[in-house]
Image 1 (cartoon, rainbow, N blue to C red):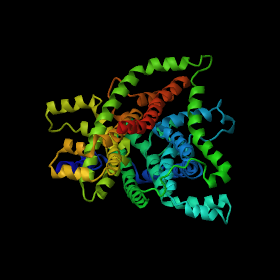
Image 2: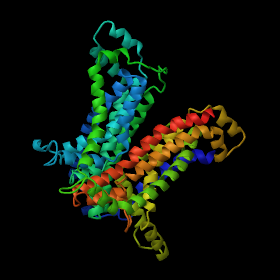
Image 3: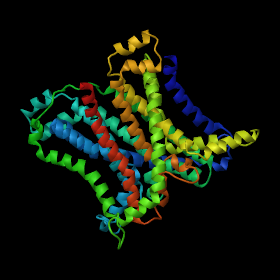
Image 4: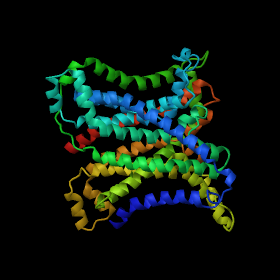
Length: 528
């Protein structure tokens, strides 16, 4: 059990040591020439741009995700509310680059909003796209918060005042803490996203400057100075998010099924329709736009799909294999980390460190791993340098970068699932001196099967669509599907780009269907 308790600390220490070596090692911030480091004025300007973009995205995500979450939690029946929430959450696994491509098609010369000439290729355009893409995360945080609020106060207020005033002054304020948490989470995710800024032809934000300095100019000091500018606000906001998550109640006040529409929902039918519109419109607009633009001028509907399938088939197989390996390793390592967190008496700071690992920007992680694999050749034997070159030319660095960010968040999900298991089972295993396999048996395979498989599916979908670190770590030869899309984004015909986006959307919908089936399958197995 000591090894399990040390596992989360070792994981966080490995990531911290990697970043410290990249920053303070030879050729980093300390050893690089002063001219290679970005001026403070440039870093400040990029930081303000990132804050503006992420802040607007957070506010927009609260609206687009909060309205359907409120309707699903308080105005609809439990079954209809669950259906609405599922529709809202499916796009959370779709990469933001697909939303950026769809937005460029909508606002293009031949698009639906083309005559308006909207400023898409700007900081505001990037913020709108990120808010559109990250709204499901806000909905996932706000829905359980509104489900846990008291209904007695709502029913008592309906006797004296109108339904809309009850909704705005009684129901909505009860989720202030969850709304702050949702804003912080969306802010952090938007500030560390590279794909939208790169798709919009170079929106000047910090995370894109990391990629430009290292991937284009091979300026490690400039990339590290931009990357380390993101870490302090991520650390502070991560602490705020962790504190807000702990302050939100974890138990529902109502567990019974609601077969009919609540009284507040019957009086506010137009709000319910608005919730359904906010839930259905974003994914329908995304998929519909990509399907409409799948055929080029003078081509049939499937012509672009066939050509893109031929061009991207090797990358599709290659990405699927890498994502499958990442999913299996993520599930195994996350289970060990979750057992270690569960064995700690006070796991609070360890959980916070795991959150910081997930919040590390992917391009900064790619720069750090690349610097580790390409050290200064002074004083190093040839066989060691040849070994590092062989590793650098393989897909192993990409998988390691994905694991460093996915395992911590997967461990927190598994630890939450394991806390629902009766404490008598692990206590008996501890008294018997059981190891890792014994503890897994003690927790019960029935309790572990569904969350572990769900974590593996989520890791597969997220690694399948990852481009932040893959753009810097992709080896020569075959590339991943996301990198293929990013390289063809501004040069390939629009039909091919739309087809590649649809291929990237496929794992999201497949994962959503499997996650919806897993709980029912688990219940049927437990009844046998």
